[in-house]
Length: 152
Image (tube, rainbow, N blue to C red):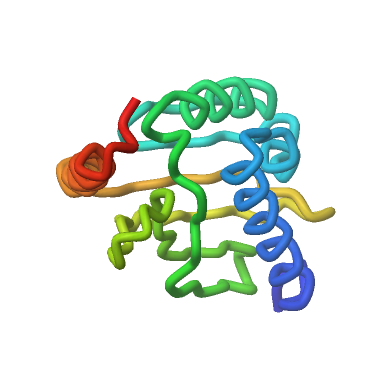
């Protein structure tokens, strides 16, 4: 039997998802960063490792505040699995770009591993994705955006 109930793990994961959506839509990543312990580790395979909630906050704010990442407006979960014994959540996150109204959904997945630490907080996150596929998706979105005259 795990240290935390499935209900607690589900609630923490739901809160994490809501904070990510808020960050994406409002450009304020504080609530999302506050889903981590003060000494959390974040491992993003393309950007490296970040230690501590404030470093995670600074990195995510800078990264997601820059175009075109700032146009990722949602991160729906395709599937997830909870390991109640370890307190781990593993999921497939869809990195979805702003809707251009052209009938296409521009998104690319990543795999996320979260380690729960209690009190609604995570002590570890790891994200892995195919950089070429992600870049290709963003390039298609930019091309479609420019074709509509929405480019800056």
